[in-house]
Length: 182
Length: 447
Image 1 (tube, helix red, strand yellow):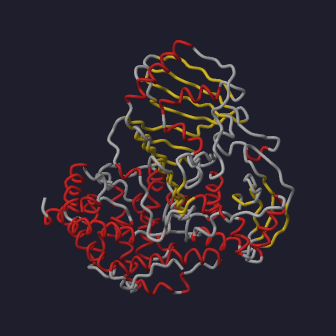
Image 2 (cartoon, chains in turn cyan, yellow; image 1 turned 180 degrees about the vertical axis):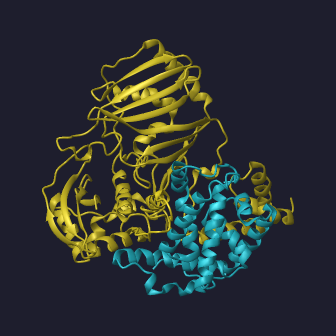
Image 3 (spheres, helix red, strand yellow; image 1 turned 45 degrees about the horizontal axis):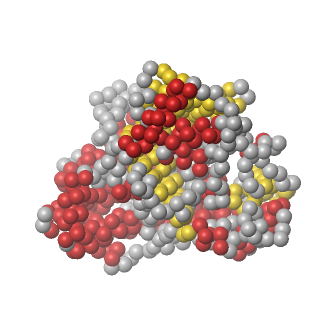
C-alpha cells in the first residue's frame, strides 16, 4: 500500500480492478474480526459501494487500499458494538452456520481458527493485538499499519514487540491454547 | 550491538523488505548471545502460531455482486444481496489441487529428447549459443515474475484458457548447486540444493522429495534461462514441432511451435496442460548477453490463439536472500517424504474400472480405510482427508462408464456420475493409475 501508491478508483472498470485485487484481503480481515463470512462479505460490499459513491470527493486520497481497510475495520467495530459481540466465544451460535452440511463443516474449521486466533489475541492489550492482527493475519508492513492506525511507525514497532513477546510467553506456557483443528 | 539495542531493533526482522544490514547486525549478535537468539526463535514461532491455518477468501460471486450493485442507478442498496457465500474457496478446486499434486509425484516429463529437422537462421543461433556460454558463467541469480491462465494452487503446468491470469514468481541462485523457488498463490516448490519441497497452503500438503522430483513440470525450463535455446531446439527438432530464430535489432527472437504431446484419440486431456496443448512460444533474448528478456506463450486451438503465459519482469544478478530457499511450515504441519506417502497406497490385482468402483463404494459406505488405501496422501494430510470426507462421504453412484486413455496421462480416466449426500449431482472423470512396479491402482485426480 504505502510502497505502491494507487489511484482512488474513478470509473467502473477501475473499481472492478480494485475489487478484484483487494477483495480477498478485505474479506479475510473482516472474517477474522467477526467470525462470519456472510457478514464479512456484506461489509466489504458496502465499503466498495461507498468508495465508488465517494469517488469524486476522494480523488486526493493516495492510498485507497489503506482507506478501504480503515472503512472495513470501522464497519466491523460497528457490527460488534451493535451486536454486543466482543466475545468471540459466542460464535458457536447455530444460526450463523450454513444450511448445507458440507459447507457447515468447512465453516466450523474456519470459525475454530477464528476463535483460536482471537483467544490468543485477547490475552494481550488491545492496541498491541491490533498491530499483531494487521501484521500477521493481514500481512501488512509496519508502514502500512501505521498508515491505517494513524500513529508513527516507531509506535507500531514498539506495540508489535511488546505484544509478540507477551504472546510468546502465553504460547510457551500453553495457556488456553487449542492446537487442534477438530 | 548489545542486548538492549538488539531488542529494540528485533521487530524490524519481522517487517516486509528487511534490509541486509539489519539482518547482518542482528544475526551477528544472535551468534554471540543465546538469550536474544532464543527470543528471536520464540517470536518466530509465535508468529507462525498466530497465522490462520485455513484460507478465507471472498466468495466467487462477491465481485460480480459489487459491480452489479454499482451499476444500478439510484439507490445501490435497493436490492438485498442474494449471493452464494461459500465459506472457503470452492471445494472442487481444493480437491483438484490436492489430487493434482499426486499426479506429479509420478511424472517426470520426457519433453526434450527428440531429434530431427528444424528451421533456423544459422548466424543468429550461433551467436545466441556462443553468448549463452558466457551468460552461463556471468549469471549468478535470477528473479522472474510471470502470469499464467490457470487455477491457484493447481499443478504448475496445468492451464485453463477460461481462467484469469495467476501471478507466478521464480527466484534462482546459480553456483556449485543451483537453488530455486517457484511460487503462485497456494503452491510453492523450493529446491534448496539437495531436496525439493512442495507445499500447498490450502490443503496443508507438505512433501519432501529428491532433487529431481517433477514438481515444477514444464516450468522447469524457466529456472535456467540460458539453457532455453538448447532445450527448446532439442524439443522442436523432432516431430514435436518447429522453431525459428530471427534477429531484430538488439534482440534475438526464438519462436517455437510445439505440438500437443500424447494420445488424443480421446481429446479429454487436450489443452489441459502446457505439453498437452498446441502452443506458440516466443522467447526474446538480448543479443549481446543472450539473457532472456521476455517470454510469451499462446495456445493454438481451432484456428484461434489465446495467450496463456506472459513474463512481466526478469532481473538478473540481484541479491537473493537465503530465506527464499526455505519454506516455513505452519505449526502442526510437517514434511512427509514421497516414499512414505506411497508406502502403503494402492491395490493390485484389479482393473482401473474396478479401482474406480471400489473408491466410490468406499466413499458411499464411508469406509475411509479403503479410501485411504486408494488415495495416496490421504492418511498423511489431515486437511486433505477432511475435504474428501466432507465432499464424498455417503455419496450414491448413479453410473460408471468405460475407462479410456487420453494425452500423456499414464493411467486411465473413468467417467462417472454420482449424487453427493447434499443432493448435488456430479459428472466427471476419475483418474486412476497403476504405473508402479507392483501394478497397484491408485486414485489421483478427477474427484
